Length: 234
Picture 1: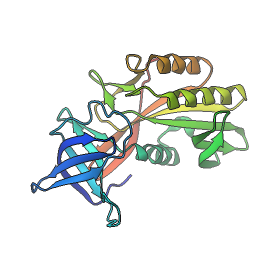
Picture 2: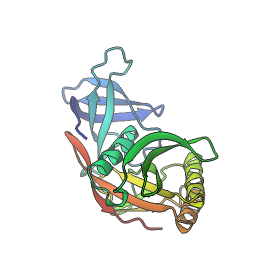
Picture 3: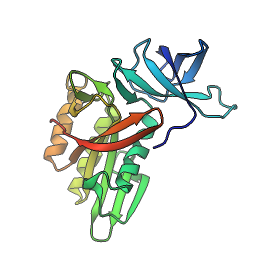
């Protein structure tokens, strides 16, 4: 995924979930949109190098959006959670995610389940069961190479696991895909210390037949690309 119209700066602070103050290289200060509803733990330290994107839309109250942050002064993370679905879709279509090949069609945001949900990706073909793919974004680095999810208690994430288990019961294929746009993360684990109920339910889902995968990314101010499978530790 190409990134265009990018500018670098330093994070002053993130606040009100959707806003961040940035100091550009020329000393100018901007308030930008923060496209991330999570806690952004370890990804929003004041003084971190960041890259923001100019939307070019002057009608927007905040024309710039925060895209990248340097973590611990050496790793890059894409904090725009809105890009996760597109990154995984691109990786499916280019053959990078080998576990999700062999389907004839791909649809997004299709209604499914019993709890008024929409699946991120629905893969279909005449020769095999439907494949329901739920995508979760992982940017919380805790310990050398260890990424954990979630970074805050997530009732919505638990709902999605229940829906995926239901799809397995109905004879379909169900996949939980961790999208990991963080160059410091080499493996993924449920964040039991943050949301123990989610961790327990994830293990139950895996035992029930829900497939769990994680894929990491190559990141630069010009491009973010899913490039490698990562181990998931349950």
